[in-house]
Image (tube, rainbow, N blue to C red):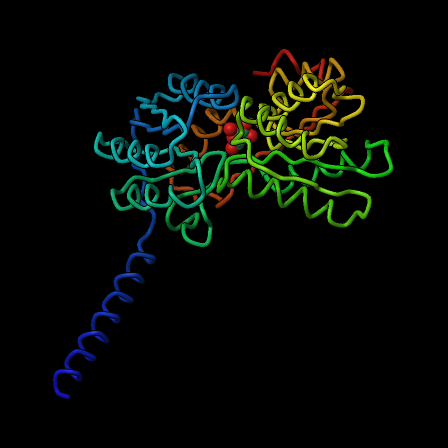
Length: 328
Ligand code: AHR
């Protein structure tokens, strides 16, 4: 009995200690950024297998000189685990500030927490982590990026306005499973479509934001759903892959299948000009200058808004030719 009491009080003590440790950790303030002439900046890219990612990395590299950064970049080659270890290695190299586009919402939380514990202010770029666990203004300084739910919603609204048939048979190509743009672009689009009885999403499958996988997934889904007349892809690379699959199957994208997408790449704008794609809602990869500005404001002691929101345009046959020269 005595042993049981001792064990119980030990457990109670351990529990209260861990609660204290947790509240101390969450009360910990964000690491400050001292004012310096030059900063050692880490940009931990997730992959470089599409024009969007390449343009984003280039934007950081182009900004490095203007913003006087000593820039370290890494490429996690599509692995969240490698992205975490890339951040660890940047911490070991003594970066002053971290810019991180987290490949997936959950696995990259560890990297955010370790950067904060090492006293490094972190800015999430273009994608976010699970906001219920890691919070802007507490675990990282801010999230800089688009409203992905709104992008999905705009894609759905454009579809409703421009689909000419009676019943929409929709195939959805999702981005990387567990990533914030895949989760949010799906929510934004599906919620709008759910309110319209003439629209049915007959299949929704991940193509990992990649052209080739988008093509393969579309080939498979076409067998099961030959009556598809709308394809909604979470990014342009998968949309282009879907166009290839449809053409191989003798279909006419832009005529008998409406193609709806997100990003605004050069290939997508060309596909719009060629009449094969209907719309792409912009999601800009050009984060370098914004990163420089936000970081400087933080070093000046300004309180940074938790979400530094990027406003997106929409590209259709009305304006694609006007913007193709600035596309990537
Ligand atoms: O996080 C933004 C998304 O990631 C882009 O839409 C996509 O093309 C990229 O890989």
